[in-house]
Image 1 (cartoon, rainbow, N blue to C red):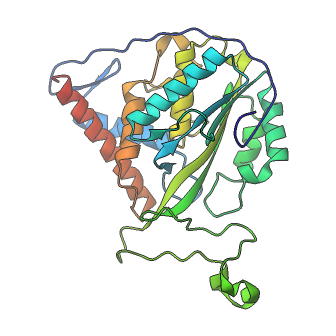
Image 2: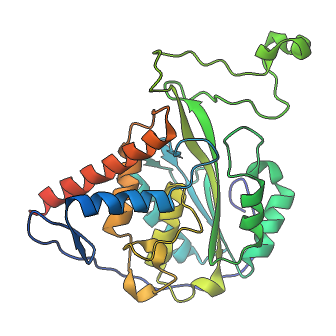
Image 3: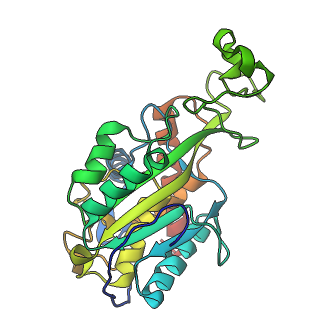
Length: 315
């Protein structure tokens, strides 16, 4: 049994390796096997972010803050350890602190022969872990039904929290929660129910409230991933765990690990698109009050990552 959730199932192991591609001449930018110029690249970045990014309703894009502890259930020890190490390495590359051995997982990966059954069991037995009740903490009731009922090789559910960017204190009240001395008079005192956030600066453009992912569960249907290498499996999990990714995104026009189930031979590992997206997400300021502006900040960060990559490789 690992961490805050548990499920039962069996596993088969998988094999390894990888190898990406090399760049081309200025003033063009090379992304995978597609060569593009200035404006076309801008459009592609906007389309990619618009397609894959799926924040919780009416919130900004969330990301992990500081620490990530990966736990794997129902896989052979050597396969489980490889996935833990690989996902932790990708997390470290974007600036997170991987958990020490024995840490309590906040990212739980469960392998099973029946993903739908395990998803339903988890939601039934630990409903509050999936829908805690705070505003903007998950994708909602319809998405949770999709998580349980839609047949996917890998399914995931993330819970995020609006927090004070300075202190990390929760900025949303949970259902039935009451704090402080005013609790005895809660019916007549709204302050007993609302967290108090002290603004460090008054601005119509920026906010002190940001969104942090704090829990993710990933369910892997073993029969459906049998054609993948363990590296492909680990990198797909890393991508959908480190960012809020739309499970229905149409990414066929992009070089991304998210296409691995369409053609496993076409993508061996996380691609330049994937790495730029993750690095852009984790390097963005994340404090734009306007949600569209927040996405633009991620897009701008991705552009900077591509520009830096081009300089590093001599493009």
